[in-house]
Structures are given as structure tokens and as C-alpha cells.
Length: 487
Image (tube, rainbow, N blue to C red; front, side, top):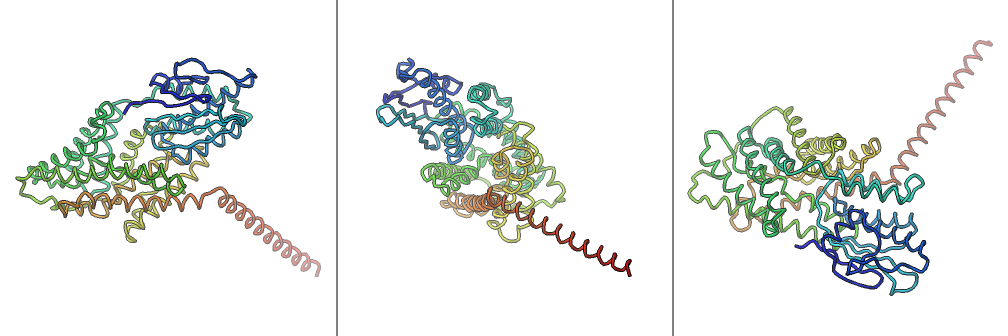
């Protein structure tokens, strides 16, 4: 799909190419016409230029937020708040790959500025953190618009320290640790999963450069991984390898749990179109993974061993600490988080895993609800200390819960039918994603500003009442002692 920018300025409309799009995102100013010439300003030149700078900044800010992984509801809220602080009237609608931004004219519809910016980005929690901070501070006394505009341009222009090597490293680390942590795999399962995870990382890199491959990335990766894992389970039986452990752990980063969770959350937040679009895209990816696993396994028609002959490897639970730390590091690299963001993201992931294990006896869905609730609470309270945005820690926690839920349910279940196995796989992920979403929503309600302030006020009131009672008791005790001394 071509990366194009549609827009209109002062009633005009046109098609802008990628160069204009990148120039806008990197800090270009002024209203652009189809010919690339600066558009007309208002009669009051100084006021018109100032207003135009504010509008272009809001447009660049919205593009940056969505490009780096901000949800539609969060982006709409931030841009609306910035518009109020800058005294700019606007209407905004954010979709999965597009932003509608309308700046109403002064009572004259012909002078409205309407933009439709098409966005193709990837999650970058490091830059998302910085852009979110800019959106929360611009317009306040300490952050004037010129400074905020320069900071935004600096964030966009700065090259990410993560390149192709980081993608391969992330896939190679998350695959073996997922086998050991979530899918009851052994050391040999982890070793083979690491090799297959490296290949999946290569496919991901090539798919980002090839549009045709990008649309079927999950299906191609699933077929290759499933077929190779079936070969390994057939000819390396003496090593005690497990087909399902190797296959699913190699594909763990392609599981669309994050997209499903964000999509359901946006539907609940009344972003129906955006949420439904994310859910449909995630379901298509899930179907590709499910059917790809089945097709790859069936390609080895000469196999004699059963894919369900897997025995869980009994190891000490203390090893899980090492596995979750390694998995979190790989996930943080793939999310493009800076090292100073890692502690909070690792703590949130560990909190979710611990709560999931503690409530495992209540059922997979119930455990996912409690685990996601723990992640939301951890992210909220840690953000109060570190000033990091909770979204980065929530994203890290979600990566742990979805594969964990599948592992508890028994991943071999989706292989029991030939035709419906892919559908069973999708339903399993939907159940876990809905449970995660419910826990996150309950956590958001619990840690909302009003409830948190009420809790703190009640705590202070309780503390002051307790101190007052202690003071009265001490005073009465002192009075009794004085009376005894007098007698």
C-alpha cells in the first residue's frame, strides 16, 4: 500500500506524495496546496501565521502519536486538550491507518481546513513516551509552542538505536524463553525454537520491505515453522522434543493479542470503527496462524509420531525468574523501549505473571482478568514514581499474558480437528484477549483520578482521625496521672 497523504487546505483538496508527508512529520510549517506552494494566509498576517503554526503543530503531533503506537481514544483526548490550551478549535477522528483533522473557519465553512493523513507506523514506546510528554506539557507556562515544536521535530528526526539486528535479537530471545516459560518446553525445545524464531525474524524484516509478503506474513511464517517443527519432532524423538512447544514459541511474537486487546478497549471507549477494524485485522492474522500451523503439520504426511506426544518438563519454579527476565528483555527490544523504560516494563510483566500463577486454579479466563488487573495497578503506581506513561508498561505485560493463557489451556487442543483447528486457535486467543481487556478496564476504573484522589483523601482523613483519637487518649491519660499525683 502506498504511503500517501490526502488533505485539503482552505477549501482545496489534493493528493500529496510521500516527500510532503515526511516533510510535514519532520517539522514543515504552513498550509500545503496540491502544487507544493504555500497557501494564502489571513488578512491579519501576524495572527494568521501564529494560528497556522499552531494548526501545523497539532497535525504533526497527531501523526507522531498514532505512528508510534498511541491508541485512537488516547490520541483524540491529547489533541483535544492541546487544542484547548493553544486556543485552537478543532475536530479530530483517529482510525487505524488514518487521521481526520478539521480546523473550523470563523463562521465561514469555505475557510475550513480539513486534512486526512494516512499513517503507516510501528510501535516505538521510547518515542511514544517523549511525544506523549510533549502533548501533556505544550501550552503550559514552562513549555511554549516554539520549544514544543522543536522537541517534536527532534524526536521525529532522531534515528532509532534499534535496527535490523534488534529485530533478529528480539525474535531469537523471546522464542526460547516462551517455550520454557509458557509451553512446557525443555532445553532442546528452546534451542530449536530459537533457531526458528531467528528465521521468523528474517521473514518479518523482508515483509516490511515487500508489500505482497507483508499481507501473508503470519501464514508463511506459520507454515514454515509448523513443517520444520514437525520434522524435528519426527527425527529427533530421542531428544524428547515437543512439536507444539517449538511451533508456538517460535511464533509467539506474531500472536495478535495486543491488537485484539487494544481493539476491544477502543470499542468500549466508543471508538467503534477503529476498534472493530483492529479486531478484524487481528482475527485475520489469527486465522492465518491457525491454518498455517495445520497446513505445515499436514505437509509432512509421512510422519509416524503423534504431535500430541508431549510430556511437560518438570523444572524448579525458580528458573521462571530467569526466563521472564530474558523474555521481557527481548519484548522490550521489539517494542523499541529505551533502557530507562525497562525496569517498569519488566516489573509490570512480572506482576502479571505472578498473579496469573497465583490465580491459575480459578481458570484461564479468570486468571487473565486478575493478571491484567495487576498489570494496570503496577503500571499506574510505578508511573507515579517514575513519571513514565502507563501504556508502555501495559504493552509489556500484555505480551506475557496471551501466550501464558494459551499454554495453560493446552495448545494441542487446536490440532484435534482438521478443518476447524484454525478457528479453535482463534477462539482461544479471543477468550484470553477479552479477559485481558476486562481486567485492564477494571484496573482503569480503580486507578482513575477521582477514585485515587478519594482513596488518598479517605486515607488522610482516616490518618487524621486516628491521630486525633491518639491525642485524646494521651491527654486523658495525662490528666489521670496528674490527678493521681495531686492525691
